[in-house]
Length: 127
Image (cartoon, rainbow, N blue to C red; front, side, top):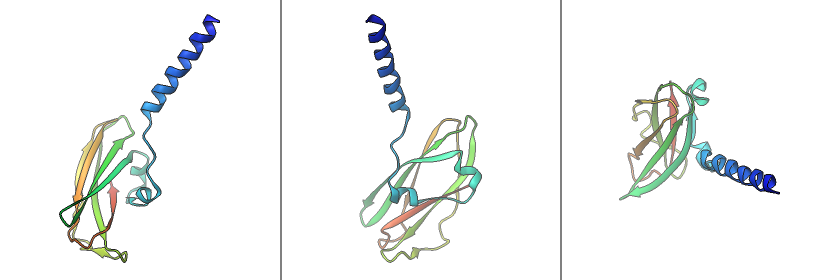
C-alpha cells in the first residue's frame, strides 16, 4: 500500500513538472501571424505568445520568442501590418531588426503599427 501511494505521488509530481514546462498553444490566428523567412529558424525559435493592445489609435504587438536550442541564435525580425481589407500598410518600410537570443532563453519583441488603419499583424523571422 505504501509503495502504491509513493508511486502515485511521484506520478503527480512528474505531471506537475511537465505541465509547468510546456507553453499554452497559440491560437490559430496567432499561428497564422507567425511567418518564417528561413525554414532553418523554424526548428530553433518558437513563438510562445502574442499579445496585442491599442496605444491610442495604434495597434501594438508584443511577441515572446523562445530559443529551443542550447546555443545562441542570431536572427532578425520584422512586423507587417494590415488594414481591415487585408492590404499591407507601409509595405517594405519596416526594417529587419537583428537580435540574439541565448540558448534556452527567451526574448520579447514589440512593434507599433505605422497607421491607425492597422487591425492585424504578422511577425516575420529570418536568419
